[in-house]
Length: 330
Image 1 (cartoon, rainbow, N blue to C red):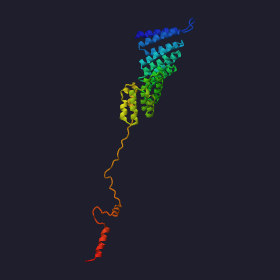
Image 2: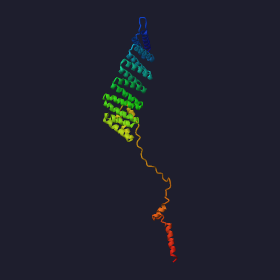
Image 3: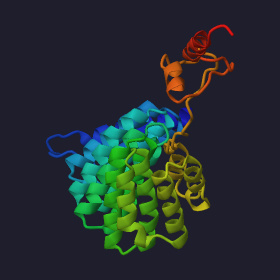
Image 4: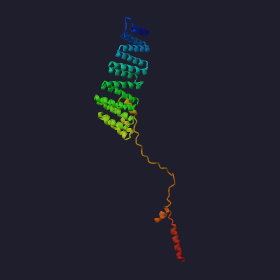
């Protein structure tokens, strides 16, 4: 490794010599200096002296920019991104990816600009998906400016999936609608059908059943028969407040085999609550004494009835006594 360090230092001396000016050399030799700095950066990288390697790549990029070689300067920044990956300095990737993309566009290579952002996204997506999201969004904008619908649809797909992964469902719904529009331009109707399923899941995750039904009505004609049957079953389950049927629909094979983000989303979509069971009011035994109406005796008398014990009413007993008195003693 020591030999590679010495090799890198020698290239640095050559680069510095190329940049010097004098009476017979009025302009620095930026091409030669850039080449020497790039070779020095490579030597330091092999020797695992990453800081020195990064510094040499930065100097090489400056030399290329001074020589208006925007494309080669962007390449140097891409090499720095790889160094950031090796040193696990992922937060610095955004800065150098932005520089590379800008220089590619300045050179007139929008495809290379979008590609640089795409490669940078793959470096940071696992640990910093929010940074990858910004890269993909920028790549999508570049592709749409260049009217590259098919490439734009690919970046739009990545944007949608990361938004779902970050549980940013409002933005994900908008991104999916944009993705559907891009696929319409390329007449990719099978893909539109799968995106319709994804949009229904996202709307249900937002808690907006009406928007989910609207998405199905609008794009369901692009779905396969199995997808149509499953979505009808799913939306009907939400209408009927049937959590068991909804869970069964969300566990269908084709949903489980969608992109990872959407298959995971199906596992956390809020299920309908279910209709509450009608329960009879509980009766408490012997809570109070039975109620007896105070007019019960009067009503019985008015009907000519007798009491339960069979006793003769007082009025009837009085009448019998009077009859006895009128008869006298015989």
